[in-house]
Amino acid sequence: MIHYDLRCGAGHEFDGWFKDSAAFATQAKAGFVECPACGSTEVVKQLMAPAIPKKGRGKPAALPAPAPAPAAAEAPPSQVAAAGPVPAQLVALLQKVRAEVEKSCDYVGKEFAEEARRIHRGESDRVGIYGEASPADAEALRDEGIEVARIPWVPRAD
Image 1 (cartoon, rainbow, N blue to C red):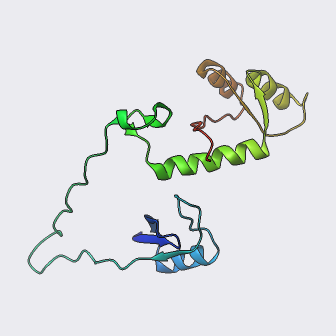
Image 2: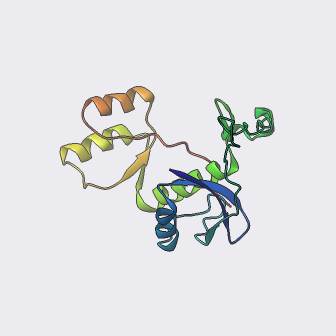
């Protein structure tokens, strides 16, 4: 695996891991490498310094520790994870997931568990649905062999 520092056409910097340089080139050319901040597929590798140990030394010197993340109180409550605030890039990605779910699936609200069962039994059309279910309902659906997934629901992007 190879790690690259990347930059999109809008100037956002992020990183990515690839099997090799050819894998990056193939994925970037196909538009599969996307900026997590703005969604641009115009992505290039940045100049990077290799981590080569000096002769007689084992491993390269450790990188300095990253600056501590801002306190959870600085982020809106809907964007605070158990370990601290959710990075803006992750929020942007989750907003894209939400938009795609809302565009492609039917909202069934609190009737999610029952509608999932009806679809599973063939009593309703096989369509994508989303809605609310308690953790116990979701577990019961899984026990019945019905695939369900929980997605962190962040506020819509403006």
